[in-house]
Length: 180
Image 1 (spheres, rainbow, N blue to C red):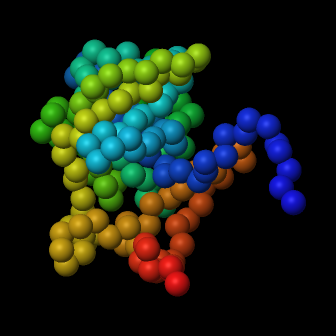
Image 2: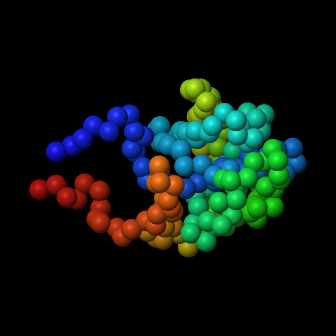
Image 3: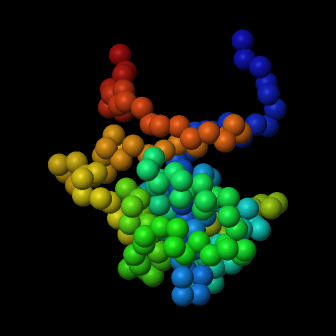
């Protein structure tokens, strides 16, 4: 028997990502678990309105979404617990500029460079609706067809409200292969 637990945000776990943007001449980074897909050509990045990075995303209209690996977690925690308004996070990760100018983390197994198409506001949050400009993937994480192999990437997941990181598991089988 199921119990109604109210309006809990229960669509977890989500991939752990670090969003990057240029703040003046330097990159800034923040930990984000509220990312989504709204089509084959659009992603969303939802951030609390008070985040330092938001103003820089709005100024440049560019950002990156970087999937975190387990090895990145110490720096990822700093990205999520330090305010860019109080302390520079420019040197937190090695980075390169994507073709759109946004900084991506070279250590991230997958990095998606985006342009902001719209901003959807809800109380206390700004959700950036973005087009995908480029996707950067370490070659060892591609399959023989040149597609991302997430079994190799092993993205870290975030579970809320316990604030725990989870490892991804084994492949259970191809999608649509379980029908009778």
